[in-house]
Image 1: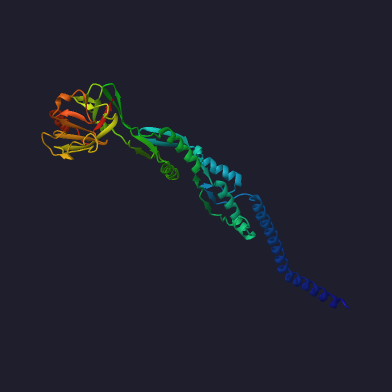
Image 2: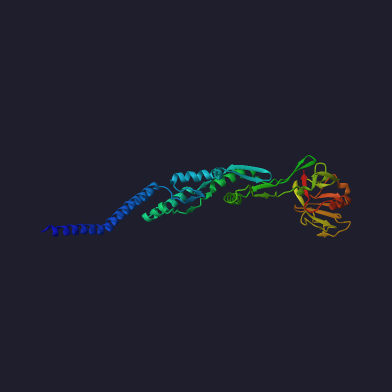
Length: 366
């Protein structure tokens, strides 16, 4: 090869190398970019995995329970947060009132409790199984779980029943009937009194409703029990003292009138005991009570008039054939003279008739 031929060939080779280098630059650049992207992607993936690992066993960001942000907390930490927030409600004072009386207790003594542990467990379970893409969005795009759960506070019905029962044991009271007692020729009347009975089931329901609602003081529900016998039952009392043949009328426990009477004989005694006026008879007709006995020589009946053995008035007892009645035989007053009835002068029996009502109490003492 001549020198003239060699110089152009070398120049041509250099040009070819330059052309080849220019063709390879895009490929190299692409490889560098791909490497950079791969490196960055690996770093991002690693960061995402690290982020997911950091939240392992923890609630996701954006989780609120009972209105509290518990994102990033473990279940135990979230439970402590919720319990701290609800501690006042769980320890608050409970008041029950009735007629100026108050009974107090604490919510915890009524079994106050929450379902916070279960709610937190449910929320944690719902946040399991996230994909890599889910974690990436949380890590790089700022996504949040936006999970919200409510915690309920409730009470043990059995504990509320025990509390109400303790109040009822203090308040429950049987009603007291009015009473009457006789001491010689005097009577005394014991007053009646109402009783009380706590409506336990209604009280338990009302207290639970209040606890689960606004939690205000609860008015106890109490039934008033009325006595069967009131003082009015002894407003009129006739005390018959057979030993001295005196009949005394007490009005509202106070001696009001007194009369001399005749009572039954030994063969036909006036019965002792407590009775009441069963019937008032104006100008009564006498009906023979013993047509086969002591009345066998008497007519079956005698109409009102001067010959009537009952006089002008009669007040029947709730005892067979026994009554207060008038008589013409006033000389028998103050003695045992009748067949069991109580004789009075017609004047006195009219006065008695006008003073007492059906139902007046009769106490007969032999």
